[in-house]
Image (cartoon, rainbow, N blue to C red):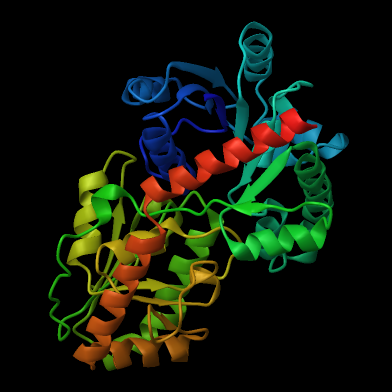
Amino acid sequence: MNILMLTPYLPYPPASGGQIRTHYLLKYLARNHSITLVALYKDEKEKQYAKHLSSYCSEIHLCKRASKPWKPSIIAKAAFTNQPFLIVRNYSKEAAEKIKTLLQERTFDVIHAETFYIMPHIPKTSTPILLVEQTIEYKVYQHFTSSLPSFLRLPLHIDIIKLKHWEKYYWKKADLVATVSEFDKNEIKRLAPSIEPVVIPNGAGDEMFVKDLPEKILSKPKLLFLGNFFWLQNVEAATYLIESIYPLLNDQIPNMEVIIAGQNAEGKIPKSHKKNIKIIDLDPGDAQIVKKLYRSATLFIAPIFGPGGTRLKILASMASGLPIVSTNVGVQGLGIIDGEHAVIAQTPEEFVSQIQKILSDPQLYKKIQKNAFDLVSEKFSWESIAKKLENVYRHIIRKTISN
């Protein structure tokens, strides 16, 4: 097949969830298909990474979008038009012109659009469009505005109303919508009953899978939370771990070490003067350090409350043989059973209790370690996910031809 892939980011280095997802899909789709990639970028230095994708793509077109989202022109357009901030700050006139030219000059079997806010760049076309929603965006913003002061909530609430409208609009404009979890699929069906999404899940990176499940020393535990701290969900989770869980846990397990790591960690996470809390700032290309952090940790702690998507950090932990203590939201959409593949906690007291429980029971630790590894190996390898995506492409092409 001849695929036109559109992404609002350059899918290299595989640092954020979206970049990891697209990078691995390109890797496996490229074995059997020709891919033309149109990707947005913010900073000129990002262009150096395009060479890492050249073995997967027949053509790569990089298009500039606003490098600073808080420019007065962007804020004004979001405030005084019917367009939400997310669409305005991710719009690229260069990308719209490039996509229009490509569709005029070439024949593509399918357009693959990652995220709804890349959709405004696509002109009217007879080429079938698969829209992949990595999360339901308006619900993410809704979650975070609910805790803000009332004077901030009103303007943001208006933007969320616009966001919800356009998100639903582009679901209906696509020929088929895909989500990364059953939970998001059901949410879309509830919000737009005429839409029947398919699920193309996230996966664990090939390099994260261990050959043998590691033996861990439970008496001196290292507790890890790793994420991209340009995302609000991760900032909220890390802050909750430090401010709400840690003080209770430190009384019970004083010899533990808590590690918070990720891009922009030092910029977003308040510095702690506690000797057993370590904040590690990662660069996008620090793949080997990330791998080492997962493999040296004893538990992955995920007090995630922000909705939507599936968490690649959870899948990476499972593939690394690193047991997880998480909220229900943190493992949503992965088929995880409490006490079998992970342990679930919803309050600081429950987190402390569950962490103590798994660290004091080597048999439970090993059971969860093995069950989680088996689950991610069976259902969340990128090779099998890419095959599922190929079948979705074929379905959408047949459907378009028959109509």
